[in-house]
Length: 511
Image (cartoon, rainbow, N blue to C red; front, side, top):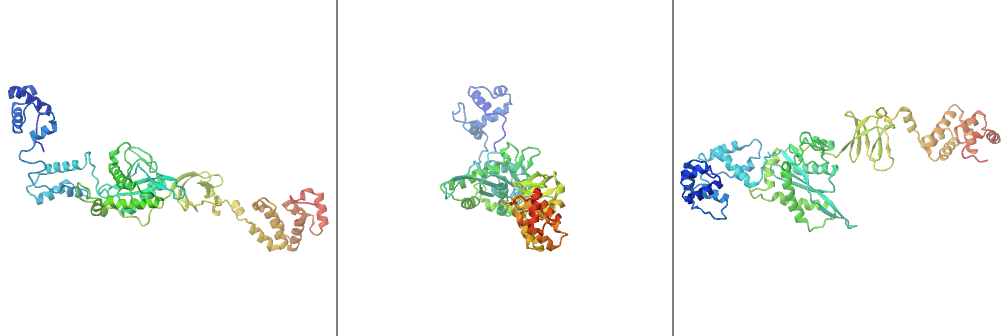
């Protein structure tokens, strides 16, 4: 370190110029506002260094300071006392509970005549400044993983059409070891964002304490320094793994300097080295990215002399929290209001809830296979998710009793009922259902016939059914008139009655 000085480089240049003009040390001190002894000491240093006015034009302030105030007899880069391996200390400092005082005590135990604590700290910080020109942040092992998407994309070509589609690059970097994970995904949307986290945790084989994302809309609804609002689905994923979400502060790039450096490194190793390859699927691209990751993590970091993988295996992996028994299954959370038909719409399909919740607000948890609905934290319904077929998924237990009875009516059920009386009644049921644009529109008529025939002798019911089919009397009123006027035994009487009573004619009647 340079010796302590009291003059600026500008004042030293002025001092040398005045001394060249024959001005005494006392007068120079009075002019510069310092003591005569300070001027004498600096003139002595200049004489020892062979410096005199005029100075060379290319002599910068930094070089001038080095020549005047460097320790005499110590070559640059060498120290008077035994030094530790600063790179190994930088690795040790990442371990939980390790600080500079612990490292200094261990150093003095080996080198009793070594540096004092203050000088030891100064030398270590000087080593850290050589690692990075900006302020370094200390990240204990297992504390944070930084995640973001690369601004650069990778091209995927459709083998059949030749259409080129860009894929996003997700990058994650552990704070202590710089151990890096990357993958390609089609979008930055919520499902891809969360699934990338699931695969990232599986790659690490453990879970750090915090995840530090950028303020991506998929992860953070509302960016704020004091109270960022986390996407609920993202928060549920974090809860599954027991990890905290700590978004980087808006417009504070140093909060995520780790991942920014990791993104640049990944772009060089991944996009730079794969730029001449053509990929025809996302799986092919990710296979190539996996191979590039092996090289990234095996690369020896020049300043500290170990690879990311070595640092991860020795320092970071042992302190990661264990993974849960099963991977998180992506689920999107939505808010919905129950409509008057006690159904909730999700992606164009309708799912029932208990009818007592009509007009209530419910939470919807949608996965690729299931739809779950919650009211005030309690699950009130669960359905298999629909992607085709009928647009309504209705649980009979959710219906009012009247609706439930109607829902239990089916063409087969009415046909079985008719068959239980006789073939003519079965034929009547089939004729009624076939006479409607939709079979369901004949259910109420069949139910009415069921009530009319309930108290009749099966033989008479069969005759009534035969006459009704013969004259196409396929409405409730027509069949009720046949019963009331006892017209089932004479076809002529039946036809005359229908002529006298036009209301008895069914919609398909012809004379």
